[in-house]
Image 1 (cartoon, rainbow, N blue to C red):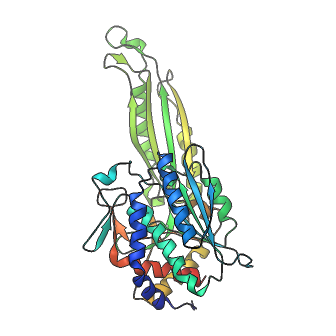
Image 2: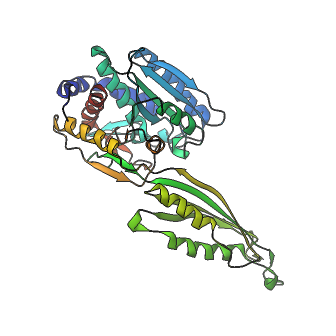
Image 3: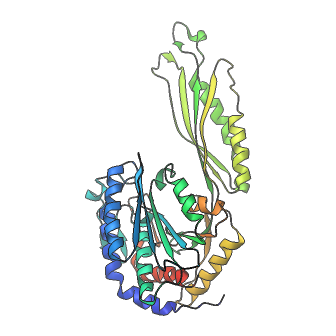
Length: 383
């Protein structure tokens, strides 16, 4: 595809601006913001609102009752006939407050590390800096950035807002980390389901009235054996019983047991089918009762022509600065799943390159910050 921006000039500008990008990143990482700590996420929102204003963004805070607030930022021509472009991300992380004490922000050799740096505070810094690089020449199209505070726990509060804003935009660029150390953009993601199976049995004394009992734990074990046959690797369907519990004492036939089940699907139709299969399970012991909660909470991000066109444009631009950009599919979900399911062209993994998301070795590659910032800026300018 032909391009109209000078990505080499943008890369040079991104290299010169790297000290300010790193300062943004250091400030963001040091503002610990675990998903389950609303006050901590809101503190990060406070700081980012002030920072965004200083960079010329208009800001709007969307307050949430039980989860972290969402921050919507806008920049560019106010009366443009063009629909905005949405940069999508999240401020929350999986790391509990206090993690910085044992896992501080630091720059060592070729890496920058710290809790939440890859997933996805570096993506936020890259997004802010990419737009900043373009402001000297003006933005032809309005740009919005939406950062939510509950993505890591399934976006229970922010999903309606994400879908509402995305429907007002021409396309969505998701600032989640790129795939692997080769930095592939993500053109497909699996959908995610989170279920809980509760089994109700009948308690009895295991030594005196064993025969009167109906074990919820035994029933759960039988159900788990059935569930494992729902896995279909050839279709990208996985069903994993990841957490179980039940019973009270070893001398009591257990009356209660439960399991948490993770479902991943590559196609929307498979989600509906697996949901029916799970809910269609029947108790082996007729005295036990099965109850299901939960469901598919993220539809899959399936590859589309519109998404493929965005990737091809990105690949052409990347080649101009010596990057060989690949596309990838991943089993993890993001808020890009929501926007893609609405039919809005969505390209994911446009943030930092690194490794160790959700792990103690979480880090980003220093040498990739400027090229990825320039590539995002070029995609915005050339859209």
